[in-house]
Length: 139
Ligand code: IDP
Ligand code: MG
Image (tube, rainbow, N blue to C red; front, top):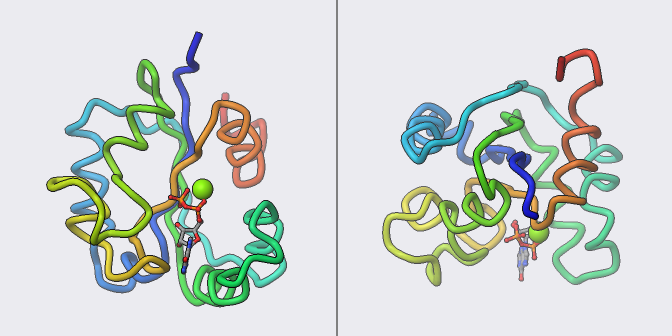
């Protein structure tokens, strides 16, 4: 059975462009409940660990530089089938290929600066929420 939690992070470009508010509004209007939220600024090392699955890929260094370039808004979200439904809400990795009305289509600027991160499995959602939030903050 699919889990009911996912993890998301509004990326530095979107926070810088003052799009956190509109993005959070869309998330709530789509039925996701915010269970935890944190504004923070990742170091290079923290971003590298968060994105460790992409180490060695051609876009890795650019991604890490970008993700540590400014503040992010990290959130734990709750809804039935959270991981799958949230991936649908944000759209494809490349904003140009994302479906109309999706967050990445509306607010993404490029493949790298695609406005928002979302977990791709229940297992990764748990890893990512633990990375950003201590146990105490979840209860
Ligand atoms: P996802 O965010 O849709 O899950 P992933 O393949 O997991 O996509 O890639 C993680 C992030 O790395 C993307 O959201 C994007 O910011 C960046 N990225 C992925 N592929 C490319 C690329 O080909 N060029 C530049 N950046 C990329
Ligand atoms: Mg991914």
